[in-house]
Image 1 (tube, helix red, strand yellow):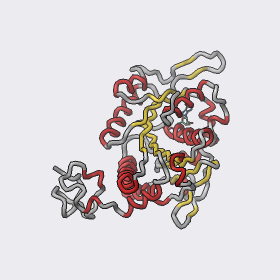
Image 2 (tube, helix red, strand yellow):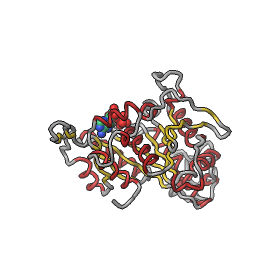
Image 3 (cartoon, helix red, strand yellow):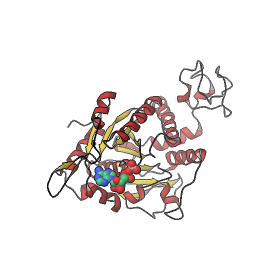
Image 4 (cartoon, rainbow, N blue to C red):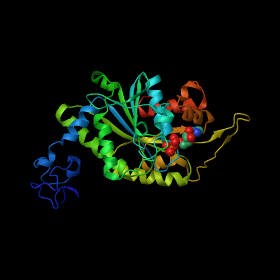
Length: 329
Ligand code: ADP
């Protein structure tokens, strides 16, 4: 029986023990000393993250197996739609540390992150949408971010604990945090999920406050992308991160001249719907390839500002939003 590979609490019956003597509670599953050793005490960092995240009722981590499938596009457009059209207060956190595209996609490149007594003041995108990204902290936009794992972990912990979101805690049901993550299953994913899980456990135990934390997975229809989504699903299962559902992006292209639909990324093995059926996961819906959506990413504007809700693509997107919010269609 082990309290987790890096648990090292002297009172814990498991071997080996953690040098800090304070391992995260979520790592103690199965330990005979769980809840009795000092590992079960929240760390100062967990308390700080809890203080910041308790303003949010929902946290969505947007994941993808591969890069370039539209993860940041989905994260941004979801943030725009929820804040502009669903009257939600949204925080959009860019954890794609080495390839931050949220500043471009929200038209906030070059914005400065100021500080307050609490910490970092996020950048205002619209009245209901704020964002934070490492992209705002670079001397030059084209600077490469070179960080090893521990430094990335520190930055993620700082973003989770020190961002001074302009939110009313009393309206926490209305407040949503969307986190854009790097592609794949890397250090960043482990860091962010373990930090949020410890904080959620603390909030539930001490204050009976519950944060719904779920993954939204984005893929294109072809097998080469979907095979990586299977790994993503396995990762979520292994780290105990519930999956809200999977979105099939770049799903067909309707030619505006002849109205014929072409499957550019052909779903040779049934696409995302089949994958969701196989894994018993919610299929959130399809987003077609749409030149207007590419333009939105380039100009940092909401899709809904170029297309009305009756356009085919937007209609599909509105269904996806309803699925994410668990609304009846
Ligand atoms: P990722 O975050 O997965 O790396 P991005 O969101 O950066 O992918 O998308 C990659 C490129 O594809 C961007 O230029 C984006 O504007 C474009 N794109 C994404 N989804 C669509 C779509 N459905 N239709 C048209 N262009 C899209």
